Length: 57
Image (spheres, one colour):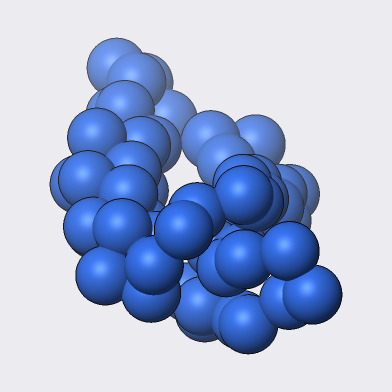
């Protein structure tokens, strides 16, 4: 998880491992403030950070 300053605002990056074990990356840009980017990152990581457990795996 990282927040970067860009030429046109702020960008947030989130990396995670999906249920099949592959690394995935989600990125969103265009935030006006660093606080907005960090807020989105925190919310996204809570909602999508953990893969769902599957029975039998």
